[in-house]
Image (cartoon, helix red, strand yellow):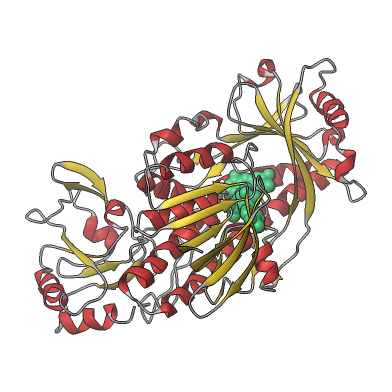
Length: 537
Ligand SMILES: Cc1cc2nc3c(=O)[nH]c(=O)nc-3n(C[C@H](O)[C@H](O)[C@H](O)COP(=O)(O)OP(=O)(O)OC[C@H]3O[C@@H](n4cnc5c(N)ncnc54)[C@H](O)[C@@H]3O)c2cc1C
């Protein structure tokens, strides 16, 4: 029987990200995907700043950026109809002059994201992907999980044994269902069909490139147009009415409907594929059952209005991968894995809440169009900029769990549209440009495999304490002094201010780049303080 440390069911963006994040921690994994190849449907398009930071860390980001939409197209355009008068444009701010990280948010379609992840995984011998392999059942015992797989090409069954099983098997996760883990929240807010196709409407769009076109003509309600990667590639969004079934959306119906929506009766259209989806707003009541973990859409179903489903899933596995690696490689207590739910479920809930607000705003817009209520329409269209501007939600979430030493008076009110850099324990350690060996790096580049202790010019006592503890510590800690005579130079002299500590203070950052603990000043006994903190993991 094949024995593999981690088996990942599902080769979508979350399963692939998990394999990559584990490989970079030197943990072997096998990804199985029931389909014969990668997805050919461009479902997600919005890649958040935090996800881009992770992708930048994991591989050659230029291989992804070659697929990104031009920055000037990152907006929604509302017009009466494709050929009618323009009503308004909704812009995403800060795309060029982002200061909170080494890379900004991007628009890249999900098929290209998955290609990038596959391409990057090729450089990692620790990860293997097998297509046309379906997980059919599993059983957990004391040493791991025994999983039965079906090779859909040969129709043969095989059994593998794994220490940990990751359910990255999507919104209808059969692993979640077999474990009888319940979901909380509505499972059907709306149904839609995305028709991915090829046609040339450049005459109407080239002067106003946009990732989304929406229409205020009541006859076009429930129809929208989204840019896909590639010349003349589009996704036409068609909402289903309650009485509609999938069968209603034949190729013939879709072709006629697209020509009607675009008011181009003779337009040549090639349908590439179609995808039906149901808008839900659900979170699993548990993310862990023994040695089995839910991640991505298997753990939460977000309304796509806001583009956070994939992003939330990628952040899930980034959170889980280092914890699994520390349990497997550094013999840290398995209870660390319980913090996965404690940290990630609140983020999923908040992202769902925000995405649902965006969905409601869309419904309000449609209602106002139907009612001819121009005043409400104007207000709601103006408010739609909230849908595209969410840096606070993306970067500002703060974990509270046993894997964070929260401070007594800890509180930070978070605005979805505004990120405030902070080192409150649990927050993403902020980006500061630093000089290392003559090259500019980001603080974010320091965080991945080890815990990292950042100290300033007067923080030597912390370094000495770590050296003294090094014989007894089970977890790896790297120390960097940021000072003119240090390992890293802060050319703009902003590090202390942004990190909120004095020259004698210290910040301990976890491998996922979240602050574990900080001390604004030196303390009487730095060794005891650090020992207490590090031994609690
Ligand atoms: C219209 C639309 C727009 C969206 N836009 C965005 C956006 O802009 N930004 C964003 O972040 N998110 C967006 N999303 C959400 C995003 O597409 C999903 O969150 C994302 O695909 C989830 O990834 P996943 O890997 O968890 O699941 P999936 O992508 O669903 O992958 C799961 C994989 O598991 C495989 N699988 C299932 N069962 C088995 C089994 N038993 N054995 C083997 N393999 C199995 C499936 O074949 C599938 O390939 C959008 C979604 C929709 C519908």
